[in-house]
Length: 165
Image (tube, rainbow, N blue to C red; front, side, top):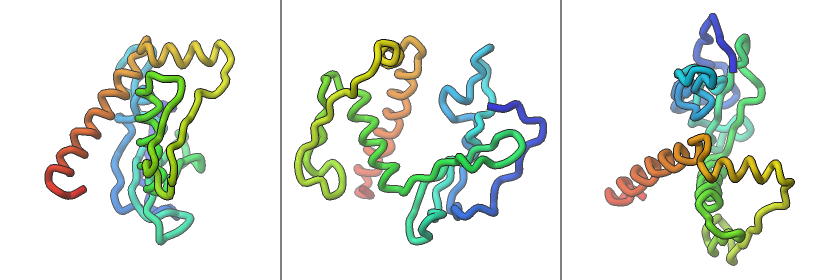
């Protein structure tokens, strides 16, 4: 994260063509909080964009636009919309699984013809401790994830009730 003195202008000359672009700099979860004093700060992830993919203008994608302090980063991430949705499904299933094995029922993902079962990957003790700190909510990040996913659930329920999904 950087403490910029000069604010960058919104990036408009990208190969990814934004349809909607949101200032995301203060919403980037733990990355938008100063760890020393707990006050809000700008994240390096400045914008969240929904638009036409830089790799295929026929595809819709989500892109996180990052600013390094003096230029727009080439490490900005772009996901096709189906991968973004699949990653939200994947995150939700694994994050809230109370079992060592997570089941993705047939049809959870496109072209998934049978149930898929995932076992936890083998990790060293320190890595497992970090994961357990997260799930035991020592940092509050697990609670924040639950809160954000709850908001997503509210929006999806509202859209379903309107017959839009």
